[in-house]
Image (cartoon, rainbow over all chains, first blue to last red; front, side, top):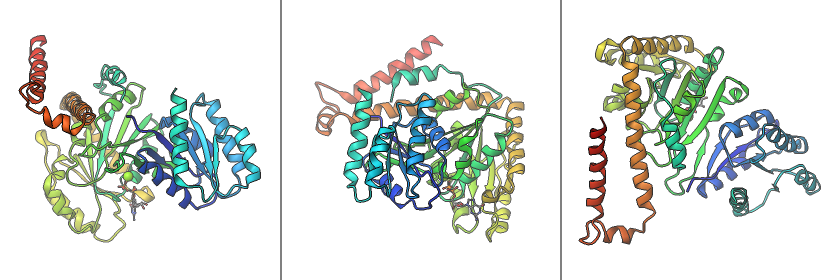
Length: 133
Length: 286
Ligand SMILES: Nc1nc2c(ncn2[C@@H]2O[C@H](COP(=O)(O)OP(=O)(O)O)[C@@H](O)[C@H]2O)c(=O)[nH]1
Ligand SMILES: [Mg+2]
């Protein structure tokens, strides 16, 4: 009944948010409430926003290549704030070889360009459902 | 929605006279979020400020993209600031049915200013006036028909007119027109007309002076208490219609249709009886 809430954020310095917007729209069309925070957010800003907005998940999009530091940082700051129930997933141009390290750091999933949108939508739905159980 | 939480919230006092609830309405793209960001930034130098930002839900999926935060991203790190994006969840009128409950929550967390930005769909957004102590109606130059739109109801709810995007041509014409049609409220508040350029932070100080002046006036007149009672009344009206609708929505249409006013199960009569009973018992306790 209560819609799933997702924060979609763009950490890092690149100015391309087309991918983030496409994902945001897909989640909205699946009935979710998506808080979109715009470009160039620091991990600190993202975490504060996620907590204030009481979201179920945070989706990070990064094309600048800084994902290896930014994504784990968000996970870590959420944990430090006692909000590790907010799960993090990521997307963007991310080399396959970086993915295991990101998952290890607590990122729940990483979606590379070309991932079907249904896959992302289903992932969010399933993850939130599991978290509730 | 979590009914237990709503009942808990309904017990939180709404009558704190040291809190100022400010509503901001006006056309989409008029700069409401940018303006709210400026107000929040300014007020947060000395006060705890909460901003509740309402955006529309999709009529197809019920989902929403809530993008008002984009205009105030610098404030995410400010410890005096709390920002919450809200979907209107299908509610018409610019807000959602739980907004007063949320105002209660932040009011009781020590926030001194609470700013509510409405959806911004235009003329029918008058609900904010039942919620806020002070309602700002934002207008922008050269929307062509905005004076026309003002004539149909939104004018009356303004405690302060704000001409935002005053950097654009046509601001003077709009200023003159609004000044001429400014509403004088009961008890003598004359709706002022402010000009702002929210993207540059211009005009914000004088707008804040008017906002404070209106707050003081409400308190002097003893009208603030009245306003909050109206807000609580609005809350019960909105919540009850929301709940009725969401319960009925869960019943298949054919079942509803067959039992609307059936001899065996007269749903309409039962609903009306239930309402009457509640209202009658209310007059007994009072
Ligand atoms: N020229 C000008 N543009 C503004 C001003 N205030 C806001 N804007 C721009 O108007 C657009 C819509 O602003 P936004 O705050 O999102 O409007 P809202 O839909 O009413 O919340 C943005 O591109 C802002 O940068 C202003 O004072 N002057
Ligand atoms: Mg807005």
